[in-house]
Image: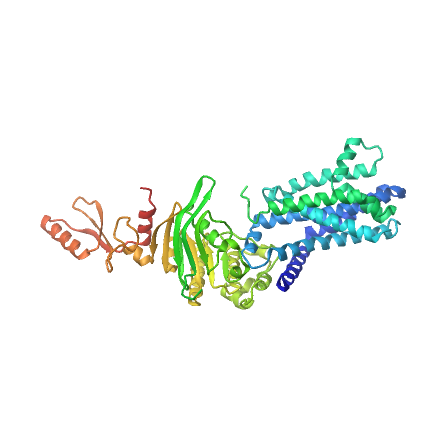
Length: 249
Length: 298
């Protein structure tokens, strides 16, 4: 037990070091949400109502980008490079390995959420979140669900070269549909139904309640349930289809 | 289990992928402290066999014991005692060899010192260089180093020198010899005959998922011609290959266990018929000759 914890911690430390040494990953993780905030803020300046919607949307996007996107990339890269196979041949417990990898994603996510929250307070005049517990709950459930979905999605990606195409084919449509439906009051009903069934839109709704509107956890339980259901599916698929080795495609 | 038990015991090992039978009954036993070579053409089943022993693949049939463990159970206890050099294993591109070895050392209960392993693998000069800047040969040496840092009893080397230049191969051979001198057991796969002959105490020649012959390279070479099972030749029997040009200048190759009689007969005939035995040579067949005979499609 002691070993499992120590080795998980060591793996986490290694993942952090590798993260900071990869400039493009660091860039995407911290500069991208800031750019979105800056661009959105510039376009929407003058309308506090629009800014109120921008902030939780960017926060939710950060959760998805740091977990779903980042893990799909990492898992495919490490699998195709043979790193996973090599690790599998060592005594490092599987649970320690994945705890380290997941904690790395959680750290990135926490940093981004912090950036967005501080930017909301300092730049957009939105103030501190109304409900810290609700924020924590939604971020946690969102992180677990999107992380599991990212690992599961990695199974579908045949080689590293096509990772960007696969990830963006999911990430961008989900992002646009969810942002659009969240922002627009006149979105078509079928689009609204789709968005409500996907995990990102409910996350935006929950974060909006926590950060901006003050709509409490008890009012957003249905949104939380949708994210958790996706998470359960993600965990099932992530564990079931996991491949430590190059698929050869 | 006692120290005298074999490090690896495999019997009637079979592996099927759908309709394709990759292994059709492999039997080998590797003794402790031995360098054992699995030699065979590509697709013979060498890597499948090794990956079953390493715990990467499940077998279809047969029994397998590695240091007293069933590798399919993937126990941490077993993985602490083995080192694996994969045919192609990657590493984080932003890590340095020193950091990678320190990280890997942490996986094992009694690791070797990182500096010592860096020296053994010849990586001192690039110990603090990021892996993405290392050459293919340097990365291969890191593969060795990562497999050795846990100070394993048993080391699997899957085609360890494929793609090496001659100098790098000799260096890798030296490393393998030094590991044997430390008392390590080594299972090596290779399709290089000279590598098997240089390094292995015993060799199993594998083709189409079966073991065609097994024994020390010297004894395999000494086998009488024909394809009887290994070890059936009479003790002390040796095999020579006599080559010469006959009266018409055609090159003749004869295998014999009694070169004295054959040479006597040949020289007598040549003298009597008045022609010269040109290009006469008496040699021992190489492992390559045996290998080509055994693996040739009948």
